[in-house]
Length: 249
Image (cartoon, rainbow, N blue to C red; front, side, top):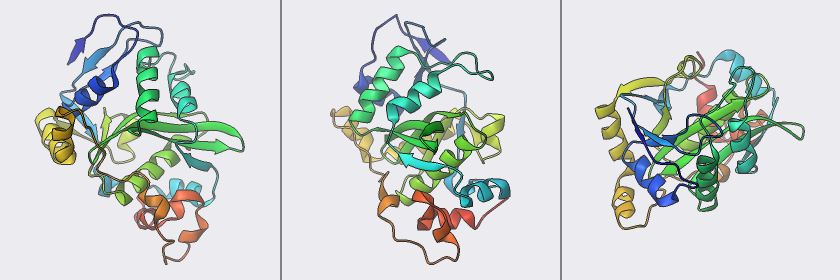
């Protein structure tokens, strides 16, 4: 289900936050589109955080330290990379108004990115929006095999450590299904969303939106005692990812 808006140069950040709290999100027909439309899927893709599928091959990639992983180090670059056309994705739904509003939401502390680097080259990652104890994954991108999967694993660890309860992936794809993403009906999603937003929903109505989960809790977590956990560089060496590494599929 979609709801079109008239052509406009920019989206209002507060409007976008209220829209997400209602279960809808903006998309554009293509990168150069002047307008956006609001989408409310009948079936919503979500990842139950305890059901993340960490395959043995992905576990090996993570332990090998193939990528240098950063958080909020290159938000503008990640959203541009997500918006670029590629051989497997000739056009994208991220237009100028969406890009600009998310850059502003990042500046305000609501939008975050996870980046994967091969040396100094940005080769993949993701970005999304935090509100209450919900995280809305917007887009993920890879230019090198497994880069987006590694970023997604980092995201799950970060959300678990920070007390988030909902990871909204918008739509289930074949790729996301391999990571544990499932579809839920709209009414079930609204109930999950309401529980994840909690008091922040009231704050939105008063013009004071908040993030109740701690997106950076993982950075302050002590190293886990688990054998081998310290061999993982960056945030994945923390205690939550050690738990994830114990459950491979």
